[in-house]
Length: 531
Image (tube, rainbow, N blue to C red):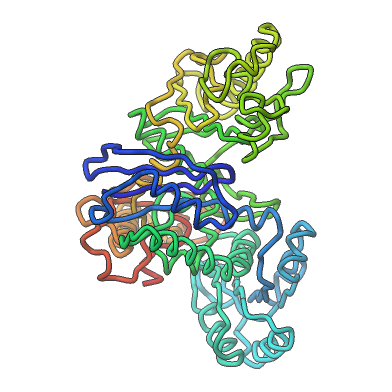
């Protein structure tokens, strides 16, 4: 058996699955500020036979929330290798002031970096790096982010710079290297690396909390964290690369929706306590956002799901004119909503008054005008339908799968979308998505593709992606290619083409404990490079 857990801002959801992917039990408990007690409560509510649990998969939004709040972030030394170029835009130039202040705004420009084909942009200057290390030490910084021009093509400069800086700074300083985190595109990759460095201390604390939670219920099975693309990473990887979890919440919900509904291609409307996230599934995996993405107003180039969020959820406030959201009572729903004896009219109260949900005390909303209730719910349906319509890429029929505890707000049909499904266990789809997560391996770099050799180059990239998935912990024989992307770079000579290949496979539970390779590489260039 295996357990999937999703730690959200309002609730901690859990699901127990058998080895045949049968759902044995589910649970939903309030999220707690200390994390630990909420997770232990969810596991106890499942009441699993502890000796039969072989793995625990956890999804969390703690790291993204920390960045959004600008809290619990460590000061970072951001070292960029790229002089004499790249000086016009120093590190963190376009960051929001709150986040920039939280990480200290310490940027250093040094020589180094590469051209697109690996040729040196300028040679590394060891003495320059030693002077930089002296300033970092003087400021008491213990987290360093190193980024270099075109490091996904040639990582040597970043590794060499980290060695020089590390020798000067001594033990107790940890490094985040951009080629392990982002893709081609310096500023967005650099931002991701700085964020990762700022979260390293928090990651150690969060992972320790999860471990403590499992120990409290005498659960000895290994645990994994889910990544942005629906694949898994192990504990060591999570400590080193916390940014890889940023979009795990929506991803888990969408993967869970695919599993529960049996649909590989559909729209997913995931309604929580505060927001409704709308995304598109293709082949059972979320459609990824094109190009750059944003995290707390900071540009990054993670591969994250293409999701539109709407300020409508079960805890959303309803105004006197019937408009719902974006403000929400959040985790205080069970205290403030009318059906729970509170004094605040929420979207959940509307659903109960209309007979769509049996939550709390229905008599407490009997006074609501049926016409007002119907009008407010119709407006919610219109806004959800508009969001789904914005996400679709063709005019053909598109099934809609509604999941999440707040999906009681979604009617049996949306305007323009007649096929709306709410599968069994819809309220814990995120936990189910975590439980079924797989292991990934990815290749993403610029290849030279000689004329007539395209098939050979592609085959080599596919084979490398499969190998990285297996090195990351995927069971041989289960790995398949789920995405191939080719972008010819017409402005570069020699048939230069950016090729991205992603492979996923089932977690090899028999191999757990025999390797320290991270169990997933959704936002890296493959786990094998970290093994």
